Amino acid sequence: MSLSVRFAHRFENFALDVAFEAPPGVTALFGRSGSGKTTVVNAVAGLLRPDGGHIKFDETVLFDAGRKILVPVHKRRLGYVFQEGRLFPHLSVRQNLTYGRWFAPRGTATDFDRVVEMLGIGDLLGRQPARLSGGEKQRVAIGRALLANPRLLLMDEPLAALDEDRKAEILPYLERLGDEAGIPLLYVSHSIAEVARLATTLVLMENGQVIRSGPLVEMLSDPENVPALGVRSAGASLHARVAAQEEDGLTRLDASAGPLYLPHVDAPIGAQLSIRILAQDVILSRSRPEGLSALNVLPATVTALRLGDGPGAVIQLRAGEDLLLARITRRSAQALELAPGADCFAIIKSVAVAQSDVGGAF
Ligand SMILES: Nc1ncnc2c1ncn2[C@@H]1O[C@H](COP(=O)(O)OP(=O)(O)OP(=O)(O)O)[C@@H](O)[C@H]1O
Image 1 (cartoon, rainbow, N blue to C red):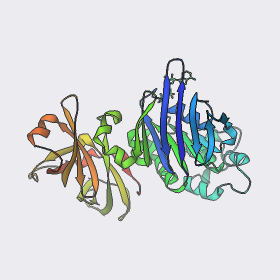
Image 2: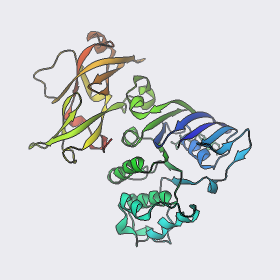
Image 3: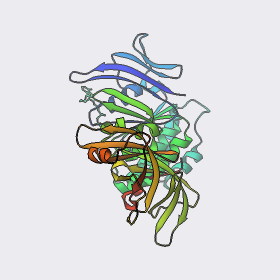
Image 4: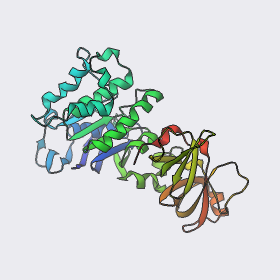
């Protein structure tokens, strides 16, 4: 089941021309403010009639300009979660959750208990929305969207209105949703950290166009995407297993290239994690460094290199089975003679890795 989007639309001062595929899993639409992300979501939802093109869900046509097909919003069977929960204030949480069922075809409603359990909202069922925190409201809104048994979920910056603590509270639920829902989820976000945690597919938008799209791991580790992702937030994800909780408060993880020590990670021994390492937090050395305070030194091989317009360079490295990115100066890249095939060591400072960059199972 996948969503195929290809359309063009012209507003008075802005033109869109987009094409991408969203397979099952989480497809993140990422781009600067005003790049056209919400307009794409609105077209998929049926809130905007594009000038030309088509939007299809497998063989089901939702929109086709040539064939003059425009399925109305309420017949598209979509779940839509906005920035703020937008719950019905006069209904209890339970009533809000079951409201969506009115629109679901008979007998196919997703199991209520399973959704309530997955989102951890069992204790809230009797409450009114006014007595919920922002994070709780968002979880109920997600539950309501799921219980309408949609064939596609649309989320437009669902965490944008929440503070960092509430975001951290809700992210694990969204991670589970991506794994368990089994339907495509189109997710608009400004935050690459969020995208790296949740998405399986990444669609990069710029000025009304899709500039690149593809599987998340490949997209994040491609040096060519660094300008669009932002040099400060670019970074690749490394997969590792929790090996030990050490007495000094560090957690030892086993990555395929070697051990990695991070400040305490709250996960059980054996848990498989995905850890985003920012390109700017990786230092390179041609020989194994000695007498260095950094604990994490992974042997790596240069696989690609991108010289920027300014003094910077981005190096893609293979470290075991993972790809890493390192942002260094062009001067250092030349001095170290870094070219595809060159062996080196990637040095990662333990404390540079933020807790929010440590994601759940992969
Ligand atoms: N109904 C409309 N009429 C005219 N222009 C519009 C309309 N809707 C959107 N636009 C324009 O289209 C452009 C893209 O807007 P859109 O909201 O899709 O961007 P976005 O990437 O979602 O931005 P943000 O991250 O700030 O929400 C903007 O320049 C906006 O002004």
